[in-house]
Image (cartoon, rainbow, N blue to C red; front, side):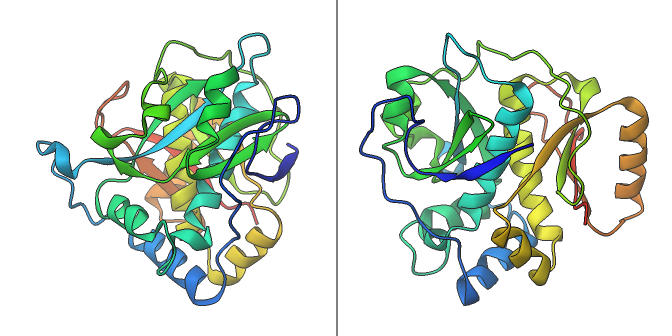
Length: 270
């Protein structure tokens, strides 16, 4: 896996656009807050029966029609984008994204993945968020907000309808955190993107502060891999045993999978 730098503009082959300026990773007390808040998890204040309380983080996958990305590097781009946003100085107290981000964490931390290409992608880059590119595949995580108040530049994008063939990227690089996806669930790329995004959040929560700073300094590299049944059994056993550096995402079951399913398991391969 080749991890590219954080990107706040379009891919090189596309015309430039008026993307918001890039932010920097949080440091000091701001990073303390980012880390502690992810460790605290969801405050659970969302009421699914009251749409006014439901918030989500939009994620947009760049899926050009003529040159579809690889499934694994695209999911790795999602992981990197979500991680970078959750550790951005702008989500910490005093930052301009703090209120919106905090309200989302107080809800259920939902994520909704959409797809874009061409002019749609370039327009999406104008909306506040963070883009990550891995091996030429790009995804952007956006500042969360109410599901009924999504920026129209994102709201018009299609949620489903395109999937990507599974690939075989080989073993993850040594020393790089891994978000393992349960292959048996056969999740669509959009569903997997949302789960991988949550997986990287629980991964950050599992890191101690020194490890977190080293990871940030290293560029936030994340590997995503699918686990076969044997590996998934081993990973699930590690979750049950509360092994250090291992955390699972339990899905609420709103789409595609049964409630209570373990969808991804994040492992900090140190």
